[in-house]
Length: 447
Image (cartoon, rainbow, N blue to C red; front, top):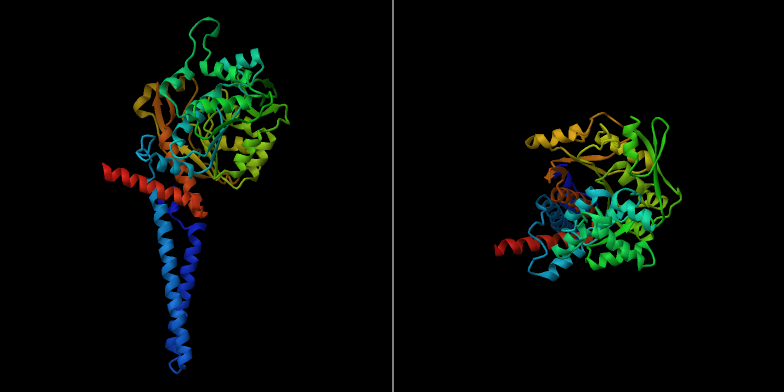
């Protein structure tokens, strides 16, 4: 998406453009009256002078406000808060800035979601992460089976990503035991399990843990019910369990046709529903399309809220395909999968990676050997897909793994979301942008 698209006048600036046109009409009316009415009386001329002055005043006021709005939108091209961090000298100013930030709901699970949250928390306090609880593998699966609790893994990762705490605490929550009965189990999972034991329910445990780690925004499980994920493969087989689905798809050499939850009538968390309805933007992904994103959309209340909300809806496409889940999928294939499971959803924008790993060919080759390749657009016309694509280089190599660059992704998301809010004349976001400009200017002056 180009700057010209961001700067296009929207609802927020159209009223001032309309006011300018009214002013120009009055001025034109007065001038025509003077030219065509040379024999007019004194009162008529006084009236025309009055109309001329009112027209000029309305035009100037409209032009002034229109210019301010457009200039604010133009600043989005330089939107980068890398210098506005927690060490900013004016703590109160920074807090006021983050409080006024866009209300963003992110939906999904896995490492992609938690990684994106790290970038977004630099821009706003108003983040709600709605996380799948269908996981049944690894340490989370063990605790789910042994203690009968909801899987804590994805919840834990999102809490850590949004935490504003000491590095040692984060390191502690990520620590995995290396041997014994707790081998490969993380301390963070055990902490959530203990908190669940002293709380009335899992949601309360998540909230208490978030308080301990001073989380920015809130992390919510999509439901408190003990749901299981099932998949129907194209050969007709039914596979039970989130961790078994990709494996069975590969073993049976049959792609996933659809996924569904049991029980089908699982009830969503009310806080999650309220957050979606009140959001400025809802972001789906990044994450496994069938096992991280879509399971959330299978919760009826969440699906209904997504179809009802007036929030901007954005899908962040995966960087790489996943064996047994999205083999050879294009960006469009991912979108069609979401639309098939959430009929009627309109994705306003889809963020697509256009970068490559040419400088890290050995990493790319290792992924290819595992059956994973870069997700790209297929370019084929499809009238059912109404989304607008935003393409940019978002690849980041971390520990020999291909990931989204959280800072680049967050910047793109913020530009898209803030622009929409500005077009709607959102006063809170206008104040937010003004604060951002002032803080950057202060920082630059001191440097």
